[in-house]
Amino acid sequence: MSYEKLGLETLNYDPCRYPGAKLLFRGPRRSLEGDYIAFLGGTDTYGKFIAQPFAGLIERDTGLRCVNFGWPNAGADVYLKEPGVLQHASNAQLTVLQLPCAQNMSNRFYRVHPRRNDRFVRASKKLRKLYPEVDFTEFHFVRHMLRHLQALSSERFEDVIEELSEAWPPRLRLLLSQIDAPVLLLWFSLRRPEEDETSLRITHDPGFVSRDMIEDLRSEVADLIEFQPSETARKAGQAGMVFSQIEAPAAAELMGPTAHVEVAQLLAPAIVDLIK
Image 1: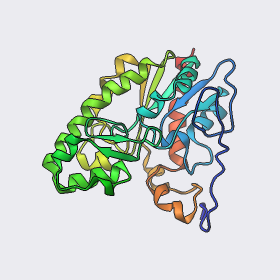
Image 2: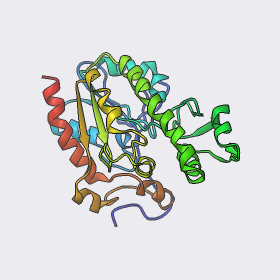
Image 3: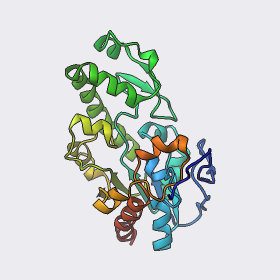
């Protein structure tokens, strides 16, 4: 088998820090002098359990310097609190932004951790009033909390969906307004944006983001690339990923190396065209 089976052996992400940034990003560290392409996004952009994530593959295939500012489970909030990173993104020839989940951001119903955007911090009075029977102190992760709320009442859960759908576009516009470089949006998902049924929204990232929401941003970006893995990549699953037994459940929720090769092949020519 092509993954680590025993113990706590994990991939060396060679963590590094960039000037003005509080977060440690995936290395090896790239120079920020001269021309480069910046990559912002969540777990897939970071390349969790992936020896060579798509940013690195694009650098290898095009010769363009690619700086990976991906951060696991990043929502828009983590970047809005990192002005140093946004400055580096602004200084790039082009910034590729993987569209983040709508649930991984603070909103009128709940707050998330400022850096670990998938972590649930607390419910607002508005959410406690909507679900008075729920003890929100039991939850540590946003997705777990949302699945519980949906199971309790799909009707009341529609109010939560509405809040996320309304809060996400202005948060993304705010993020885009902080990046002076042209931005290429990347839809990286097992589903198409049209497949926005609630069950799929929770299961497949970017959670709670629909076609209408991303189309609303088109006029403010240089391009939008939509990626869903081929049947070959889906069947390959986690083959080639590097993870220990304890990490297996997390790895099972992510796309494997074959999908990264495919998205790199899709992105590379688009990036080259945009920086001509």
